[in-house]
Length: 196
Image (tube, rainbow, N blue to C red):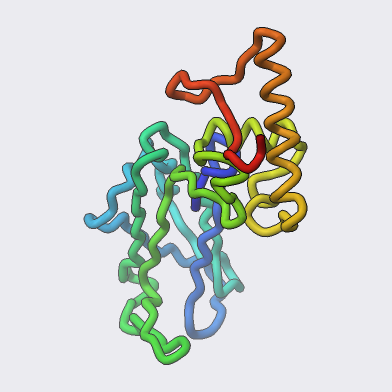
């Protein structure tokens, strides 16, 4: 889960828990633990898990709503949250793997990688758009009325040529008006050499 293309401060993901065997006419509690190998911290990078987790009467599955929390250090660091199902009086964990595409996959643990590391979109050409920065990406998207995802897979070759020129003209206009747009490091924002 990456926060890189959004302004949201949190994100909720569903983690489905399913059991083998038949339905029962009673609620059955199950247990999950955060693996010690996790680098994500409860209360910092994700909200604490519910105290009581239950497969409801007549059901074979449950969904945990896991709320992930955005933190400033995620811009440079990825965090891992590994959750493990534990055996208890209601459930065992003997069935620990299954084969998917010839590869053994765990059936009792899951990993979530959480970060805010912003990657340069696939169609960002430095000669047109200039050196990639977070500030520039969001400025370009706001000015053009597009999303970062559009720069990832929607941009046509013609747009990749013409849009940076349009942004550069706007940056030049802002500068002439005394409202120069700056990068995070204090340098004036500019598009690539092919956009001038």
